[in-house]
Length: 277
Length: 271
Image (cartoon, rainbow over all chains, first blue to last red; front, side, top):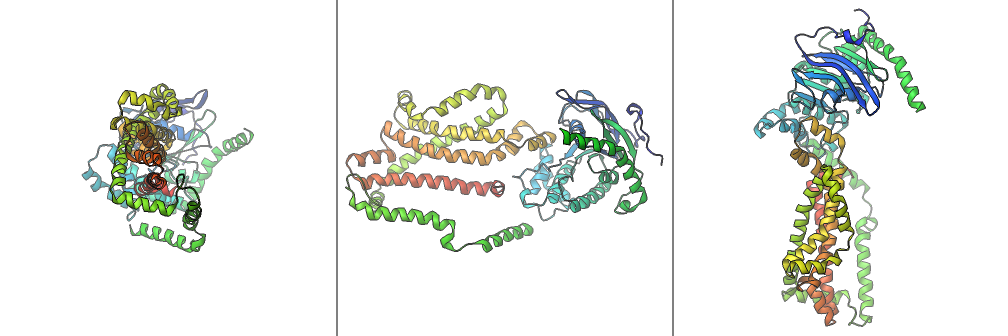
């Protein structure tokens, strides 16, 4: 494997994903008022590909993801999911949120059914489909529990099941495991890998954990700079399907170091910047 | 399910462990102090001229008499009718109007000032006008109660909807919810504790409105009983409707709290 080279962004499309890309991001730019968050973002995500996005805090990873979900308008460029231009949230794309985004007044069952309901599924459909997803994320027996009765890890399982239940082509993960403790996080990472093996989709996984990005991603996009842009795209050539073994492989450590070294300087600057401001 | 029951059982156990002896419990203080007031009143009451004052045991006797003769139930029924319709209209007008204001900025801009102005106006001052416009019968009374009660409902609901968790609204948008469903799934459940607080305030104000309406229009209901017995200095009988009003206020608000805990267990757990 060649060391991923620092390339100019425009000619970097990464390895051609099998078939047509599911998501195409071209020349994407975004401002918040006078602050430019990112510029000229270009990348594709294949039909069955996981792309992880890492970058220092405040680099606009989450903003980028929310643009792709159509929650935020972008100022430049375009986003396509399949043939569809994204200007508002579209069907077939589901997002998992950092703070779970569960409705406190809905039970686990109703939270998971939420996306289906909004998509206009009938009650019979919901009763038929939801139990499978409850089981898939390991929440059987908790259908009638409310979010406040559950741990963070269980809440995010519920959030994940809600996204999976609409049977999306695209899963957008916004630091989904950032708010749970370290052990739970590791368990959930492998659960996600298992579920993805069962139902592969295009996935964009935003995280600040380099290990997580390398473990889950087929490619890792490193965002850097102010305004940020794609600094590097690292191909992750770990064996599939990924299991706990991946963590022990020397190749895993190598890739982690590679991503880390590109981020290191930026991370230091970001920290210093935060202290100063 | 069994897991949840276990969780609940665990919570119950923890509470049991902490339970203090009865004389140090909240209930002991809550009811003990009321009992103390009643005892002191009972002892000192008979020494005051009965033309101006009465005391608990005498009031209790009057209460039984007025109940048995059917007089109290009859006038209470009249009052409750006014209160009920006034409150129902306050709720079904106040809540949707508040959500609409909180969601549509132009509506908010337009209505903000008139609503605050009306809320700040002592409603009593409007009662003579209302009598002029709506007459002196049931309709006028209901409108008075409505005007007393609608603003707390409206203002609290508005506040609740405005403070709605932005991340939940984002979830709703991400899942392509329509505005109608956002009201149902997100805004109203989120605002429910605020709405309940608003209705509790509205009950208090509504009762005031009810009695004032009964004084100013065709005299009826508990308000009628108060004026009638006060005019002939039958203090024990005057106190009966006053106590009934007090009990009415307390039971309506605690009933509402109970209802809220039943239909919104999550909001209870968060406090």
